[in-house]
Length: 265
Image (cartoon, rainbow, N blue to C red; front, top):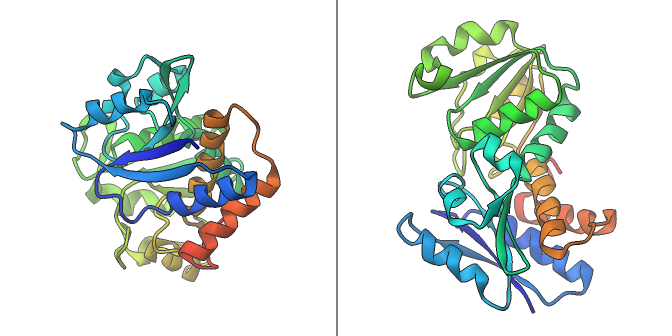
């Protein structure tokens, strides 16, 4: 029996345990997936514990995706580019970091807007950087980041958002605004039918932003598809084997059971 943990903070809302439990059942494996709510000070010991005999590795989520980089034996090049790790795997006694968020986000972008031109990304943290790399991968020509912190790091101040949206054809929310709430980071009057919207928030499904976007005639998807996409890729890393469609379907079914039939998986 192997164990995978999710390293993060205030992560009781996570749907990952249900998703991965379904995957392990479908594969006939007696593995478990557990939450590990740890502070930044507790993170080094938690990561060191991944060397234990029954550990397959870990997922890493907010706010530890960047901090964990310096605690691993090796990180894949994509992690260095995005400055974040979301998956840790044991390989020959070493802890190796990878990032399955970027390809999962790219898949969701292609579903909404295969060739985006003017893109607005909300957020200035690791999730926003992952979105940025995903957008580069799909050939987005113009990407503007909007952050609460203002213009630091090349971001536009939040007050500039209404001026950007009329000409945008894709909006991606990479902030936690809307998680387990009815809040939205965008005034619904700024949304329009020519805009596609990807909200990385998946609980609730749909989020307020997704609901408002659809009401405005826009194509919109919530974050459950990203969760699924990064999840099966992480599973491939831990098990060193491809994950077939029947297992992915079981994971998607678990997410619908957890989040509701409207979850975008």
